[in-house]
Length: 319
Image (cartoon, rainbow, N blue to C red):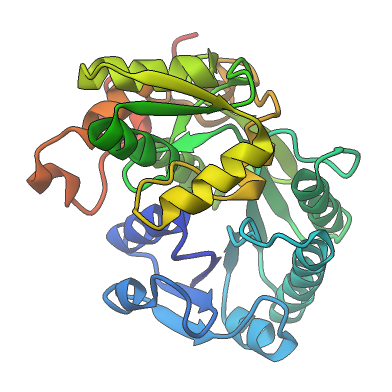
């Protein structure tokens, strides 16, 4: 059995579908009343109700589990102290539960740039949680990912909606921050290969897509695919946070929240062949992933789309 935290988040939904399709038995730890609970009840999974900082719930969720995939992150929490407590206390309880249950491996996903020495509170908080896991003695795999995009994400989907409705592109800061967008299906493939692979055990592995692009280049590529005249609006982080709250009410917000805007200020890039070297396949380029956003509705409703690992469209052994 595999325990997943953050199962109703963007990556979590794609992961749960793939795990179930592959025949894994899945348990999810989920807050009562969490957004996405109805969707999760439609999946063939076991649900344990509880918060990541509730010792009893975490201990119960860990019983009988062989692997943990920890995706839950307090990205919507605006208070630094509360965010740090959720990250640290949640990780401490997961480690205790893993030890008590004899769990064989804990997987975790964080943003590239995560580290306890970061000047950004979210990346610093996640960095401390990572350090706790690394020093725990529990076998682990930590994936540090660049910007993740795909069906159901906020950034690309929100950009498409905003362009189609208003012809606007919102760019926080200068838009020159370097990113390495990686398709969500390829992140999930990396996680699946980390469940048992010995070569990745007890490693912190950076992952990113096959292109280094600025934030402005990313939204420009999306706009060109839509062939819509656009107006670029450059915003400070504070102004972008205000605009995101305004756009949230009409379903056009392209940002997850203030923590998302923090991360867009950090250059999150790694080697272009990072995924190939660690996991043996070539990830999908941005333009191919964005094409799925524009696919016929019947295709977009498919439970999941094949990643580079499954498509077999590139020789995973070259390079």
